[in-house]
Image (cartoon, rainbow, N blue to C red; front, side, top):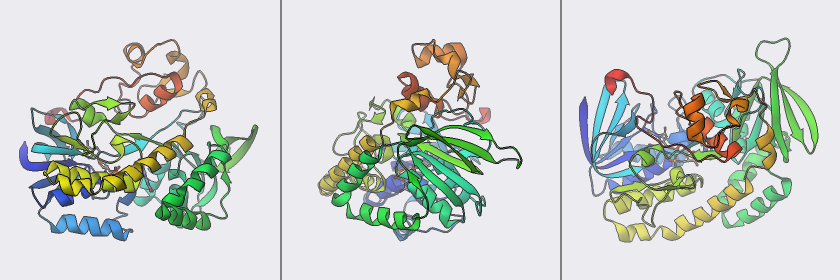
Length: 415
Ligand SMILES: Cc1cc2nc3c(=O)[nH]c(=O)nc-3n(C[C@H](O)[C@H](O)[C@H](O)COP(=O)(O)OP(=O)(O)OC[C@H]3O[C@@H](n4cnc5c(N)ncnc54)[C@H](O)[C@@H]3O)c2cc1C
């Protein structure tokens, strides 16, 4: 087992983690650990080595040029002893020693089960985008993008630019709510610019509000073709496609914070104004503190990096900007709140936990995720409830179960 010591250890090389590492490195020895082969996180994940955004390029180059140690391809799976974490890398286990820790572990998509959601070519919206960034050819493939949230737009825009035929974007939120959200964007000019540019590029793609996916079946004929059904204003519409990219907004990734004893409330890591968690030497920034978009991740990261290295006056200068991004996050989460009809999508034999093949019908008798786990193994598979946990929370109102290390499956020899 190798050992790496840092004054400030940052977990997550996305917008928040990179933004924390830079100001911290002016005062301290900093290490950034990320489980991807390259820095950038979800939004800036390099596309086969090419980085599209100039802002990301600048951050990544500054990081690489600085005294910061970057460890890629390493999955942090839990604490070792006090002030030490363990990560699994292709070369074995790394023990990461720290004085201050910044958690910038991002978010993941929320999946809601519907009949047929486990068929091939039905993927998370961000998941399909990541696969295309990784080299999957989407040219001339028909894609239905469905679910909720602005990520649907970003994904449709990306896939179209890569040659996909985007059949439609089915957004479950009501048109009036989206309109209200859009009108409130005057406070965020960059969002207006980005949104308008995307809308123009997607002008030939129908944006169906009040519409949600109700099921998918394999089409007869071509091997992976799908017929997706959409509920649209009380009517059912069938659409033929090759892929369904479906995601219902995002869920903060709080598992690492949770095993380290940080307080989690309503699914987010609780932090004070300096981004400090309930554990004194642990800070948290970006999506784990609440879904707020890239600007929130950037500014929270900056505050966390400055605060962790005692630069509190400089950190305070960013509070107003951070509070503004939080207001945006609040408006975002309320505009794209899930409608009650989505609770009725799954049938008795719809799989909810796909790791352990547990159907909806088997879960309805249990009062809690713990009971369901003990009796059915729901949430006990390799994803450790990352997929079904958010779904059962929405479907049954269950509190998520306790998180225990290792938070990811790890090879026996690395434990
Ligand atoms: C699938 C997906 C796709 C998205 N696509 C877009 C998009 O196209 N456009 C857009 O505007 N927004 C997109 N978003 C939202 C976007 O992620 C955020 O606005 C922004 O990137 C958040 O930055 P972050 O640093 O908080 O998190 P992230 O960018 O998610 O960075 C977190 C990083 O931490 C790593 N990590 C997490 N846990 C560990 C661990 N235990 N060990 C090691 N590394 C770890 C992750 O792999 C990731 O690289 C997407 C979100 C998701 C979930």
